[in-house]
Amino acid sequence: MGQNTLRLGVNIDHVATVRNARGGDNPDPVRAALLAQNAGADGITAHLREDRRHIVDADIDGLMAALRIPLNFEMAATPEMLAIALRHKPHAVCLVPEKREERTTEGGLDVAGNDNALADYIAPLRDAGSRVSMFIGAEKSQVEASHRIGAPVIELHAGAYADAWAEGRWDERDAELAKITEMAAYASGLGLEVHVGHGLTYESVGPIAALPQVKELNIGHFLMGEAMFVGLPAALAEMRRKMDEARNG
Ligand code: PXP
Image 1 (cartoon, protein in one colour):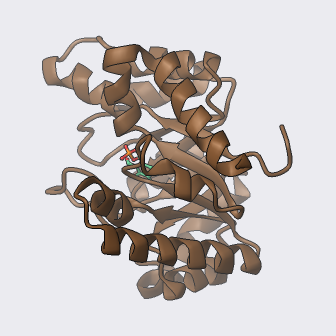
Image 2: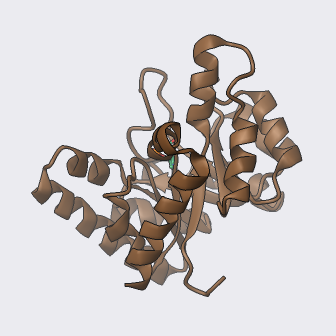
């Protein structure tokens, strides 16, 4: 893999969403993760929500046992999740805000407003060897706070950019892209590893993939939707192609 290769993390939460709509075992998110792994995913992301609406504890057990590629374990900064993460010691832990009423992770984590508590919270995760990342909006105060508390990685929330793109609000899309561009460069200058995720599609991925400081994209909902029509390996290959095309010009 080249030095500036962009990694693709595949989020499998929505395989579990479909499974849980009926109960039972199908479709199995661990099977989807293994398929993604064989199709060239660089990592798997799974969000164990407090309400277990999609991924459940047994899925994390299964992923930890079966995967050869890194697991990025997404979770809220609660005592329960800390205990689970410390039991599994996944490659990466991504801290996200969580509200019960939301359909998806709507905003970034307020690291700037909780930096003392978060510094204490991430210490044992770092000691356990997990790479801790903060899922934040593209704001200088949040980037600086993430750096201050010693998180090695940030994931910039691409939701506002992706929504503006999807709804044809071009000025807003450009403004959101400019914020992500600026904060990716700023964070990277501070020594943080920069990831981006949320809402990315074949259309919207290019300008983000082109940012040289971005090391990883985490993509789920759109990929799984496409997989229903063309299959997961084909959807993944097409996303990879768009990423590489944007990255390498
Ligand atoms: N990254 C993070 C931190 C997320 O919370 C999510 C959504 O769960 C994603 C990436 C993937 O977003 P999407 O499913 O919209 O591609």
